Length: 385
Image (tube, rainbow, N blue to C red):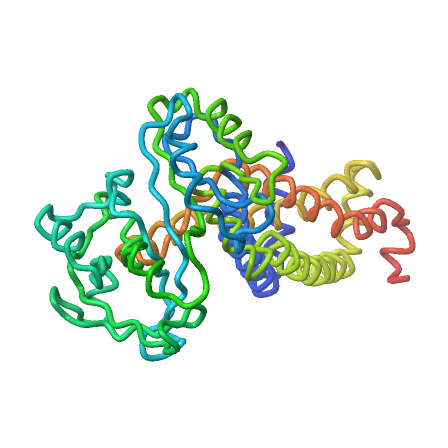
């Protein structure tokens, strides 16, 4: 610590170069903090322990359907309070760019989702209207829908009487109980019975069952019992948490973990080259100064340590600023979007990985300049050789 002031002075000997390098490190770790937080959040929630709600879907693929008669068998499992079901519809509104989640649901679907608030009179109106639909408040606001409006939904998978037209009437509008979950209001639900009767191709099938449990502590036991019902059949199931189910759904389109890893590998490779060049140039310019330090009694090991500490300090300073900015920016973006964009906070795991990367990058980019400083001969350095 007694040489910290000396290291600091060496680090900011060329303020412009150090500042530009520092900004590059900040940008790299800001990107890392945001992307890795999403990756960690995306890969969490695989365990069903402590869950009060499970999703039961096909073990083979999320695109595979399950027979509706599984509902009564699942409901009979001890520990199950309620069972609702849904079938992915995949319709579009006006243009494919106007994508939002839409699926057909059982009449008791909202009974297992107390976190969705639907006015009782509107929910009753939906249940009484065969072609009715329930839409999220955010979705209704986005398209200007009001109660009683007709939505000309177009099928992309399931035609009806040879036509893709599925006109639905807005019977109810739901809100997320927690404003932070306003992003969940970007969905539409129609009647499963209407869908089952009207579509041309598929009958008595659902995409998944939503199971509400009596006791979250029994989640693992209940999940195993449910999956045992269809074991060794042509419709084996996999019971999982809602977050795990959503991850599986998203992975149909892309492997988030792989994408994040590839982006960060490219970013940190570029950062290694940039900071390595900065440190090499900084040591090259300070050869006479390093020779003077050795003349004053600094050992080769001390000079090597000074250069390594300078390198690690440069990366650590930028990295900490970058991760701190990510911690501030992500909640701010989520709050500004009113819940439409859900970004997790930077978790402890990301901080720990970030600190490890800072140390590793600092040592890697500083080791060659530090070895050069260690091997420096005083006479040659002062003579300019």
